[in-house]
Image (cartoon, rainbow, N blue to C red; front, side, top):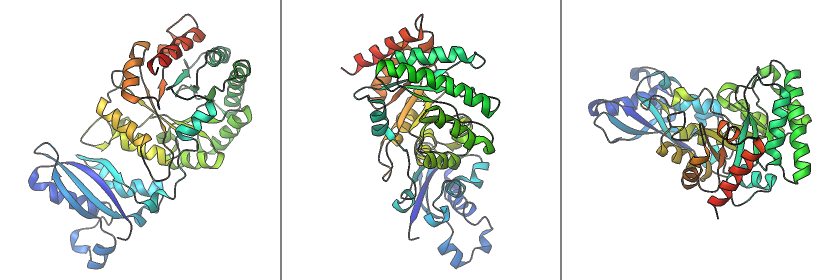
Length: 371
């Protein structure tokens, strides 16, 4: 294997079965035939090689590292996923927890168009976490979204996104709403001298995606909110690279990878490493203590994978969210530091009598945390 790609799995198996289970994963993921049909040549060239199988804290839990030839991934996201977690995702007790990707693989990916440094330059904001909120609730008239957007931008907010369920019925309706909301943001930016950014949701059938991106760009918006596991991970990568988009990634539909911690993938690997490979500049995920079940350790790992080294790819912003409140800001600043996005939806919108006042209050609090 000239270019090894190493996947690490947690196997929920008794000690007596762990080595056999690891070999089974290696075979299933590369040749999917009985051992008797594997020739020495195929064994040497194709079959994954088990590097190690070690206890992982419990008698029935083992960590297995398996090496694959990187060429089997095609140096692309769909084949990578198929190689490291295709068929075995249908089996119980196998969890993908890490990928060691060779430089030859990483070199094929552009990664985030902006990343942390580029997004800060675009916003003209340094030295503090970014503040984001969402247009909601679904069903409200566009005039209310215009008012909310204008108030948030005048208040100094950084990133405004559509709520993930704010999916218009067709392209003309989407284009009209995006045009009006972006106009409200642009008007506020002209008054404040700032550069609040609006990211409409990109969610629809495949044949409409280019038209929706066109509507976003014609309106003057520079980015989108994209759910990679609804659109397709490589579809998001293609659209980001083709159009130079700022991409905020939403984790919708990824929960089944995380709910059983003996199965699926770790949040850090999926929402961190893989989303970053797909060109996401910001990755939204549930913060501990909100409405969802991520642990502090999982979120710390996710944040580290978004911001740490990954070939030449720019680091991306972690965006903890989900039931966040004014009172949680000090804990979030302690946990994530300066380079993060505080995504506060209902907590900001309901904090004060106006969205403007709520935005100012949150920004003042954030500024006080980093002095």
